[in-house]
Length: 360
Image (cartoon, rainbow, N blue to C red; front, side):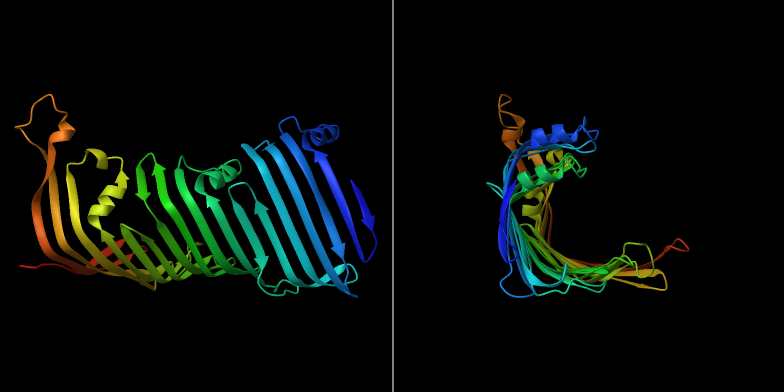
């Protein structure tokens, strides 16, 4: 550790062997369950261009990092660069305003950038932080960083991701003003299901109130080649209070693509398949504890197909090679509409309307 400079400008630089640091700290702390390896180098620059002004620039380089805490798995990072900068004004030892601030985490394959969108006076509980977050990289590498610290299901996700979000964060709420997320391709696999999409995108604007637990989604859209879902004016109380669920949901699906690209554990042996285009919507509202759902669904050019083996094929040919699909039911247009009410307090379900209309 060494430094130079004065009150107007200066620099502090450091270098550290993390394994040796752990050994020295182990003389004071119980670290026998902690693994810490790698090297750390970096520097901190400061400048005071005018009275009351403040500028800080910091960078750090981690190489061959290996970290395991007593309650976590192993986090390994061959190369990680951290870059941060702050500009603002100060009164004495207190920062009175932040005009600019940014933080970047950079690896060989991924990058995370977090920055301040507007000046902030960081004083009092009412301060709101306008933030911009941009993340790029791969699903597998980001999940590998999360798994050591957060228990995740046995899921495999692959694809290149691009995430961009703008938000307002304060002591009472998290407001996601706009966000876009894309994955090319999107391969998702659980023991019970798998999704293989060439591309998937998500757009979301939402607000979560920390005090009441109320989550509201102004607009959310998921799109893939096989299906799309839009949610508007959705409100749900994560704390279980009044107004538990309401909103508008609309869906579209290409049933043939959906059956090919979205598979469940039993789907591989199922002799049935759908074709056609499905679209519809559900409207949910809650009044005095009673939930009302109204729905409409349309199926255009619908076909139900069954897989059958051709008996004339030779026995030496594998069964999968001589199976064909035949149409069992064909429906040019099918409509299914209705409404239902549910009263959870009295455990009552009331079907108000239900109709099925075909093209005949």
